[in-house]
Length: 171
Image 1: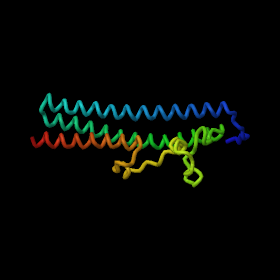
Image 2: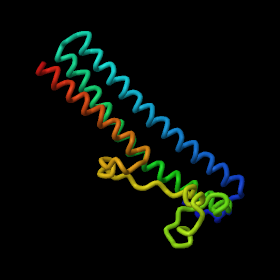
Image 3: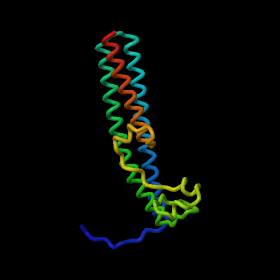
Image 4: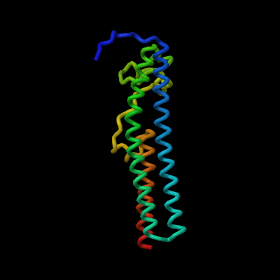
């Protein structure tokens, strides 16, 4: 592989790279929500199968489809959280290159005393790289981020489907 001379990008190239990173982030976010919508629609269809057919095998088959789709949606959500972290690091590097990380423009979320003494509006608007995904905080209702909310919704759908199948079988 040939070694290339180090080129310094111009500001317009950095802006374009940042714009593309934002587009990738939004595209991944939209894909995640479409997967959630698909699971919700399949869940509604699952209930419809039981109501229309009263056939345990059909209900079980529909339930398995919903649960498999839900598991894939959880995996998509986790993967997209990793992508989100990469894109935010890239975006923050572009912002840094463009000189945008200033308290009056885009303040960084710092842990030091300097930042803690800043105005509340600056602290509240500070940006940071999203935290790595961990499964245990998903179970903590005080932990709030989009990935956790999505996974909680999916887990609720899975629990609903499992309980519905159990009650369908026993009732």
